[in-house]
Structures are given as C-alpha cells and as structure tokens.
Image (cartoon, rainbow, N blue to C red; front, side, top):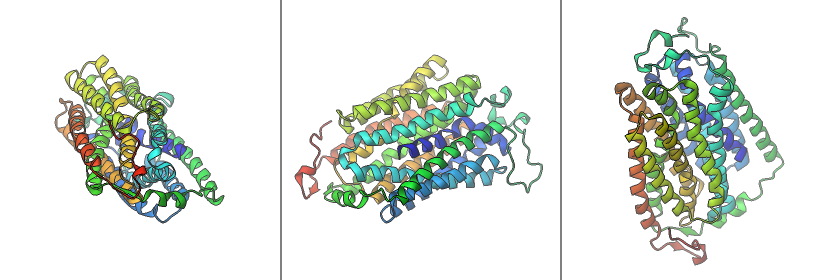
Amino acid sequence: VYAAYLGLGLSVGILGPTFQDLATNVNRNISSLSLIFVGRASGFFCGSMIGGILFEYMNHVLLLGLSMLATTVGLYLIPFCKTTTLLIAMMSVFGAAAGALDTGGNVLILALWGDKGAPHMQALHFSFALGAFLAPILAKLALGTTASPENHTEPHLHPPALNRSPEADPGLLFAAPDDLNLLWAYAAIGTYIFVVSVFLFALFFKKSSKHEKSTASAQASRRAKYHRALLCLLFLFFFFYVGAEVTYGSYVFSFATTHVGMEESEAAGLNSAFWGAFAACRGLAIFFATCLQPGTMIVVSNIGSLVSSLFLVLFDKNPLCLWIASSVYGASMATTFPSGISWLEQYTSISGKSAAFFVIGACLGDMAIPAVIGILQGEYPGLPVVLYTCLGSAIFTAALFPVMYKLATLPLKIKDQKALPSSSRL
C-alpha cells in the first residue's frame, strides 16, 4: 500500500511541472486549460464515492490492484491526447482510479490499526508526499526540457510561440507529443504503477489479506454524539486544506516563472522544495505521531500554514522569501490530512463510507479551488491570486478546528469506555 501511495504521489505531482507542456500539446494556454483540474477531481469524486462503497463488500487488495491498473492506463494515454476534451476525459479516468486508491489506502490502514494507527497513517501519506517530491525532478531536472524561454513570459496572452503543435487535422485525437520528454515522464510513472499493481494482484491470489473481516467489526463500538456533524466539518476542513495544497503545488511553477521571473529549472526546484519539505515533514511525522496527539499536530500545522502563507502574500516577489516560505508552507501542510483522519478515529469509528465522504470533500477542494484560481489568474495576471487563496484557506482551517474539537469532546456514545483515547487533550 505504501508503494501504491508513492505511485499516487508521482502521478499527482507530475501535473504541475508538465502543465505548460500539456497545454502546448493541445494548443491551449494555461488559464483556458484550468478545467483539467475539474476533470481530474470529478473523476476523483466519483472514484472516492464508488470506492468507499465497494470497499465495504470487495476484497481490499483486489480493488487496490484494479485501481492501480486503471491509473496506469490513464497515465499512458494522457501525453497522446491532442484535444482539450480528450485530455480532460483522460484526466477524469485517472482521477477515478486515484480516488478509489486514496479511499482504499486510508480504509485499509484504519481497518488494521484503528485509533492506534497514527504512525502508520503518517507513513502512508509520507509515501504520497515522497512521490509528489520526486515527480518534478523526474519531469524537468532528470529528463530535461525542450520548452523555449518565451513560452513562460505571458501565458495568458496565448502568443504564437505556444502553438508548436497546432491541430492541423481537426479529427486527430491521439498522436505522439512533440516533446518526447513529456511522454517518457508519464510512461515511467505509469510503468512503476503497473509493477505495483502486479504485486497487489499476486497478494490477492495468494489470499494473504486475512485481517479485513476480523478487524472491521472491532471498530463498530465507538460513535461520537455528533458523528455526522464531525464528518461534515471534516469535509469542509479537507475541502479548503486540500484545495490550497493542490493549488499551490500545481501553480507554484507557473507562478514563479510568470510573476517572479524565475528560470524554468529554478521554478522546478522551487516546486520540489515545496514538495520536498512536505515529504520530509511527513517522514518525521511518523516518529512524532508516536509521542504527540494528532490534535496537537493539527494545531502546529495550522499555525505554520497561517504564518508562512502570510509571509508569501507580503513578500510575493522576493525570491529568497519565496524559497523559505514555500518550504515552511510545505512542511506545515504535511501532517494535516493524516492527522485529521487519526484525530477523528480517536472519537468515532470511520467506515469505508465515512472515509469516502471526507475524501470527497478533499477532492471537491481539489476540483473547485484550482479551477477558479486558474480563471482568476488569467483575468488578473498581475495579482498573486494563488497566494491570497492559500492565506484565506489557512485562516479558515485554523478557525474551524477548535469547533471540531469542541464537538468531538462532548460525551460519546460508546459501549466500552476503554475505547476512548488515553489522552484526548491537545
């Protein structure tokens, strides 16, 4: 499952540094292609919803293997898409498979370890962050780039230099991209994910997943008094948190080249600095989670996100501040998602459907916020809209968590008082 999440991080992280290349491949500019996020997140939405239901009835390992196989198909086909509609459709296929994988990994960890699984949950999401960190390196630094420098001066103006692959044949749907580095980047990640899916299928046929039924029934005895309200609040919390994370991770490359004037290689390094700090902090969180309560980690993360996003807004054209604040922002965002799941599991049991619900909230944030920001950035190219969004999301999540904590610590409906966490205080 950790290897699967590494592949998930690679496939999600590759979009940011290759966004310009994909736009060139379909003869579009960045702002007009922002619907690609809607396509990916719409698929993610459907995959999370269907996956949450299927994980209640199907073998977990088999469903994860099928999700990885579908992800492989999507990644292989994306570089060959020559029309915007087809590219968005392929992103939807990829998003659906990734959504089922995301829900399934969280459910499986909770099924195995329950409210004692905080370190394991952090390790799972560390694998995702590591993949997201490696993706820009693979796309731009290891494989190089063939884009010309003028392509990133004013992408919203759609200059003729962007039209390197015009659609001479309107009926042409699939064709090899002009930039073969784009093809090899996606093919390499797709091949890795395919290999992981083979191992998952091998585990399924060996019938090695024996803990699912025995552990799933052990979690049905704990339910918070305001169970549904907590799920709804966590839905909103993840909506803004994931929306800000994906927005910054996807647009920081384009933002750095157009707004700050960085070179492509430097902007790719900045993108990797964000995801690198993100991955490093998630790795350290595996150890922190053994001695700190999830609620404590959420509070620290909220404070770090608030401070770093404020500095990004105040010093938006200062390259040094951009490097430092991006790293701090990535580190602060790192532990929030896994800590949120582990924190809620302390007070109320999370089933496959419950996990699907708040994952849907996350993918709606993934869909709505980057799409809106892409349009607004095209309308107001002189404003750091991306940074304003990150600051607003940080303020909202910092204000929402105390409300969630208050509801969670009200008297619980439990059959066994021992089900309570040993220390529920921040």
